Length: 169
Length: 169
DNA sequence: CAACCGCGTCAACATGGCTGACCTAAAAGC
DNA sequence: GCTTTTAGGTCAGCCATGTTGACGCGGTTG
Image 1 (cartoon, rainbow over the protein chains, first blue to last red):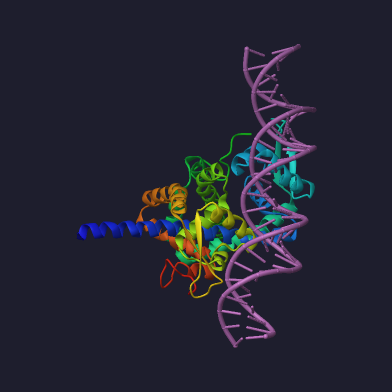
Image 2: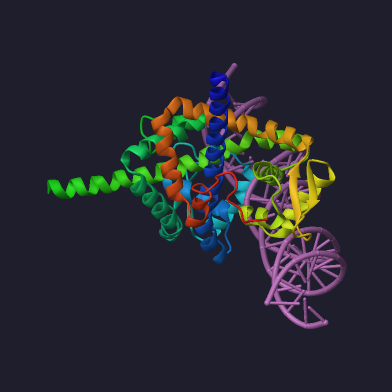
């Protein structure tokens, strides 16, 4: 009987534990995006613009199709926001040298500035959390988060060159 | 000179580290929602329905305003999805005994079943990640995630009774 | 009994996904 | 060298889910 009760209790703890994980993800993601969203709203942009700005900043000279592969949205959806960003001078396109069909994307100075501003609050939030939790906890955090990803995305973090796990161009 | 180089290097590592955190959150959240989204689409529901189902399941007899406080959306947005869920028999409303203006929300059997089905893949994903990472890493994960939250949300996880950090009713 | 509160509803709008069709120009294959 | 494939763009329309603002009804409370 003691065994059975222990088993049930184990199950309950596990259930609680998993729910906690789910909710942490929900709340953390929401708060993580809340501050940039305000800045974006003020200049008539949305979260989609932020994502594009972020990844173009992260991978300078990224091609449109690489960007699409990261964001996993359709090119029609991307082109709406990307078009605005280019027209308003946040992103520069240059024709690929080796393959002239490609448009290599890069942040302009204005784009870099916006990126910095948008991500600043997020960086602070993470930095604060890392600091509060300590180095060991950060390692655990990373391990667990990696475990949540599918193989494809996980590969982006364990690469030859972490900053450019993209295809050749 | 060695000091300066070390300092710059430190800064670079920190930057990399913070970006990794941001991206982990982005990819993890996306994959976390992808599987339920498919199930939902098949029955003409969306992510918003899932959230409502989830939290009503989590806090049986929750009131509408408590739910609104958790989701942080407008009542007009909520009422759209909540209405559908009630009309299609996934959620039951009963008038509050003490305050008859309140609608206490609860999953029906049908609702419980859907909740289970939707969250199953997510639970598995988390369980897998926890298992792969180990107990210590899980503790670190939790610490870091908590550190990302604002005080208000953090309180939901360090309560008298974790399962009902809601107001009296 | 007046004021406030819990909840619902109507209308209109924005954002950011989606599908499908169709185009150009460049590269690659045979 | 011609054909096919690829990279990228574009038009048009649909849907889900968020927003504001206005208003109503019934129940609670000072």
